[in-house]
Length: 358
Image (cartoon, rainbow, N blue to C red):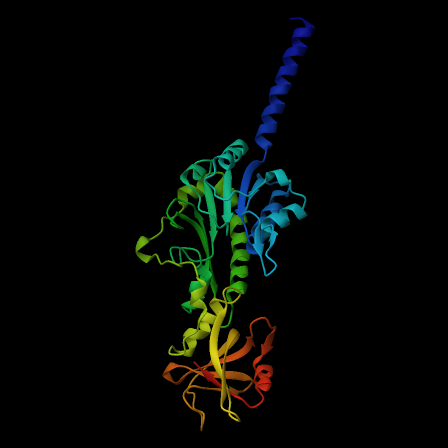
């Protein structure tokens, strides 16, 4: 055999070996889908894990809701996920913002990435069957409830509204039915009686981030799919989207029900009441709207000389009489267009005028 032929064979063997080694160590592409600030927590955890020396994956693309008009100025701004990704230097060409996940151009872009896995965390867009067929290992969702409980758009808010003492986060495969896919893992958390929805949501997505990173190896090697547990449909409950009309408080309910609603609707849409301000000196009456910011519950309300609809000031709080002789004690309020103030500051501003619930 000639020296030239031997060298050619050796080179070919070396090239094949190098290519094989390169392919075996190539990181698997993941696509992340999320939109609000809580999603950033998950994406940040994924970026951090992908940068470790023994990481099996990389974030190949990011999908988020398109820029939208926000606040009073209606300024069009990027989603929290898009802004965070750009700030850390992620390529804008790999940040996709389709109006709908069924758009053919978007699906074509996704297919070209050959994603091993898609991960969703508060993305806010329905994923069609065409999408779900693209990633090799499927799509996994972080859902802030103990599935099958509280499937739907507002799991944290509805759980707080119900006054639950325990909730959690679930990691589940995505199927066409809403939040009904097999569950890979769950983590539980106790619920404080005064925690508000934004804080609980933040805690749950922090917990969900850790759960995702822990389970990723088994998801990527396919073993999570085998051990994932189907949900018990007989125990399923729903968490429908909140609408602004639900913001009003009705004092013919017990104080604890209203307190839970204030906690659940904190942030958006908030909770509101209409009250009557009565000037006893000239018998003038004026109806105002108050946004209720924070509350506590009082039982066995009995105030000598007060009428059933009188709002009184006790221990730094506005006491609204409720059913079953309970009272909702309001600690902070906000008038339309004004800053949040304490109940004491608001009460002092009345300057002796009476306050009545409507």
